[in-house]
Length: 368
Image 1 (cartoon, rainbow, N blue to C red):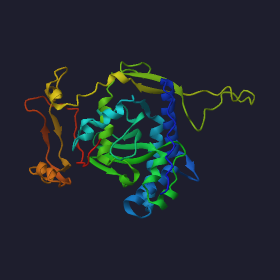
Image 2 (image 1 turned 90 degrees about the horizontal axis):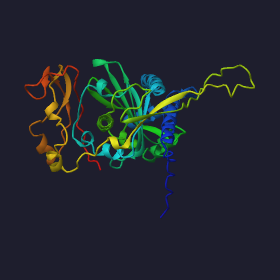
Image 3 (image 1 turned 90 degrees about the vertical axis):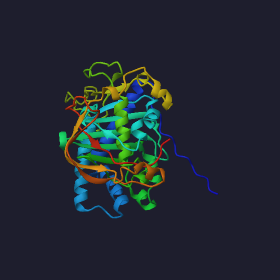
Image 4 (image 1 turned 30 degrees about the vertical axis):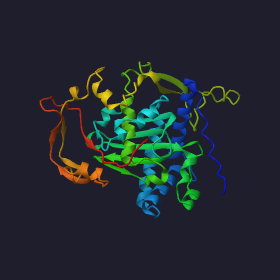
């Protein structure tokens, strides 16, 4: 019987607020370099995309796929350079794992442009999110392009770099070029026109499936609800900390004098948002207690109706027998069906013109 050497843990971020902010900024800068900084002519992110493509198809990427991946790398790198960065409280990981979005069979997402705290963002979890036997999630990033019906949302789940090769086929694990830093994306998904897709066999990367990745992101957006305020001010729910920006290109010197070249460099600052711990009240775990809790307004009491345009949506092929099929151990894979324009929500209420609906496919599995 051979002994296995456990993986060295990721160095913990300093417990101070400034230490956590610096750790999150280093994560952002290293991932921006991963997607955008050329190594032998191409960024390392291209190699990760190729490995993801191989786990999906068993073949090397085509020329068209390589061109698409190269453009995607450039988009991700540009988004990371302008991303807003958050540091989540330690308790948020457990609350996301227990959130209804993550544990329900399906999720109805509202207007993503209104729900998103920023069009490009990154959140660092000092205590990682643990779901089933998946790799722990130390961060998530999202990138938005376009608007309205043309909106495209890309989501990345981020885990420890050392964990990526543990489930890949040996030959692929040996050849994959990964970041030299402690963190690496292990899942990339895209949502466009209500269709949700992934770039890899997520099980081999220890990543959540595409629907679960979107649900985790929506759960973070739902839990983080600070009051709107200018970036320069602290909100009741968040603190803003300015830290030196990690930039591989460096700042240009302000003087041409060789003697004072180093001392005259401009130090760029970046604002990192620290979400305060007491903001998020733990939801009651007891259903009976939740039903009798009158401490605040009920969601159903304030819900307005919303319009759904005519489009194709993912629907259960057996809506009348769905519960019986699931309870019997079966599976209802969603199918694309044409849906006429209609209005959802409680009858007799006003219509909320800002709200749009996208259907997230059913996802199976349990979470702990």
